[in-house]
Image (tube, rainbow, N blue to C red):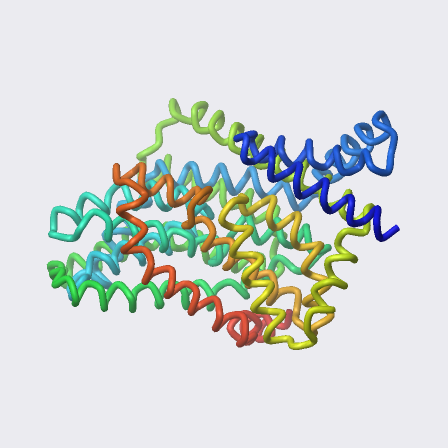
Amino acid sequence: MIGADLASIFVLVVCFSFLLLLGVPISFSIGIATIATLLISLDPGIAVTTIAQRMAAGLDSFTLLAIPFFILAGQLMNRGGIARRLISFAKVLAAPYPGGLAYVNIVACMLFGAISGSAVAATAAIGGLMIPLMQKEGYSKSFATAVNITSSTTGLIIPPSNILIVYSLASGGVSVAALFLAGYIPGLLVGMALILVSAVLSLKQNYGRGEPTGFKDSIMQLLLAIPSLFLLVVVVGGVVAGVFTATEASAVAVVYSFILAVLIYREVSLRELPQILLETSATTAMVMLLIATSMAMSWTMSFENIPQELTSALLSLTSSKFLLLILINLILLFVGTFMDMTPAVLIFTPILLPVVTELGIDPTHFGIIMILNLCIGLCTPPVGAVLFVGCGIAKANISEVIRPMLPLYAAMLAALLLVTYVEETSLFLPRLFGY
């Protein structure tokens, strides 16, 4: 049986890696590798039928309905003038200080990423406005791009976040409300670490301070930003208070975003709605295909006893909690460099969660550790989606952006280690609210 398990691991890893190297889309790579692995134990007809059934069963979840709604809310927010208003609000907070526009970039990405739930959307919306502005004020293009790319990932940790909902599904039912609460402090820690490093780099490069905003204008910018920021209160507050589920909260987010973008800010016309719905449908289809194939792969690994074998292998290496957490972080950092977040969470949660549970680590805390690791991967070549989008927005080469990103990577890794070994960074708020 052990030989069969090792053969399954070998086929899965080799087939999946080979398909990725050939440039096959990741959802198809996952699906083909999964079928190849299952063929070791089952007849071809049964294997294909089983995979189709597991894909359908993987999508049969009320919780997953939240994803298309949050994607639609993000599309409305992205086109509704939210980014510009958040940048204006962030200028009030941070622009008067040395390197102030770097702080504005970071704060605006944190706010927009949290509201839209998308790191790519934050990179495009904020970067499209902030990178040219920073260049105009004397900042190097590579530094402005690096700041934009790294700070955009914080929106995946600060709720509402689709990936936290995906982790809840993959973990077998960790509370979404607890995960939402757990993401706040780590997200803010990453943001503060990036601000600290940006401050040092700005002082070293003598990047100037922005113009201070008068009191009257400051109040005006705050009032303009409050309706956008209030979405966080409505969605997250409603879930935490038990007023509605995460799925119901996503529908509320769509209604609120529609009112804000179409009726209040009036930057989205009714004529644009069909195109927005079409783009939402296309994005949802890609995400759902990834989820379906990833769930099938997760089931196949369980069927072939792969998680049990890997759990035993990891626990046999050392009994030290400290060393095992370092090893798990290294695995996740490596995975994040070549795999998208959604399949990574769905595939590796069933593998690694039993290991950390054996170590006495809370599943909510581990969820934040996993997401934070994979967020760093979004900024890392060769597959980092946010890295490529940010460089595309700035019209910069990846090679020239990597160097100024190195100290920002170090800041994110420092925050990751703090979150990993100080569990109260994740669990303080959930425990405070009784989760």
